[in-house]
Structures are given as structure tokens and as C-alpha cells.
Image 1 (cartoon, rainbow, N blue to C red):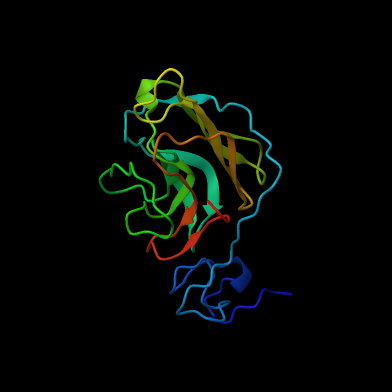
Image 2: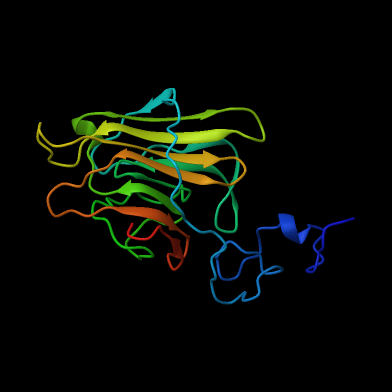
Length: 212
């Protein structure tokens, strides 16, 4: 049988991500509280399985971001299908590809007006890829199981010395909609903090794991 189409827009409600008045990732046609965000995704700890090193490298300065990168597939994220991202030096990616770069060199608890929009924070803290390590990205696999991976490999915190630990973590997007944050070595420096999680465009809805 055909999918239920309560808003009669010829798109099955189960496949429809918009309209979404409260920006919580649940289409109004399915949302039992369409004016107030009630997030439809949750975070949980799983066994870490690192992806192979992606094949492409990025040259990122301190507090810099990449150009616009293609995922290679459509990815569902907060009431929209996303096909492109930017990678930020400070440990996160964002689907908000327009506008000017912001430093974002101080992590905040989510949700936050001072955090990036439409972002996935793998290990948001003040990092400096220009001082060492490699940032990589790439897409692997075949539809409908393609995977987009961004990797910070041995990237130091800003101002780190030779004895300070280097950070290794990955943000992994699965074509079917799952997100993994793999933190192999994630260490802040001094009094700096770090944040992991997701945030919507309006910066009023976030998903974080407890204590992150």
C-alpha cells in the first residue's frame, strides 16, 4: 500500500523530512508536538570501530575551515537532506556551507548560540592542524551503504608542546543516517574543555551523550 500522506503533498510521510516547524528532525506530519522541538535522535556509547584512513587530505590553518566538500550521497540531518559539508580545524564539521568562517576556538555546552549551526562536533576544542598531524576525508562503499569519514590524525591542541598528547578521532556518516564519533585519543590541554554532539540550524536543539 501507499505511504500515509497526511499533508497531501504526494510525498509519503515516512520519507518526508520537511516541513519541520520546530527544526527537531521530525516532519510536522509525523510530529506529535510540531511547535516545540522533541528530538527524534539519541546518542549512545558503542564499541569503537575505526574506519580506514580516508584518501584525501586537507590543509587547514589554525581556526580555519575547508572549502565545500561533497559527501557523495544524500544524508538526513535535522529536517533536511545534506550533500555537502565544511570541515573545521577545531574538531567538527558543518552542513552550513555558506557565510564567513568563525574561529570557534572555545568549546561550549550544547545547544549554544556560540556554536556552529547544523554541526557535528567530533571533539570540539582549540586544535591546530597547522602545527602537526593530518586532517583527511573521503567516501567509501557502494549505495546504499556509503560512508563519509573525516579524520583528525595526530592533530595537536593549540600551543601544545612536544610532550603533549596528539589527538586522533573520526566523524563517520553512514548513508542510511547513522553518525559515529570515534575518539581514539582525545585530550584537552590546560583548562580548555571539549564538546561532542550535534546541533541544529536554529541552535536551540542539540544531541549529546551524557558527560560530553
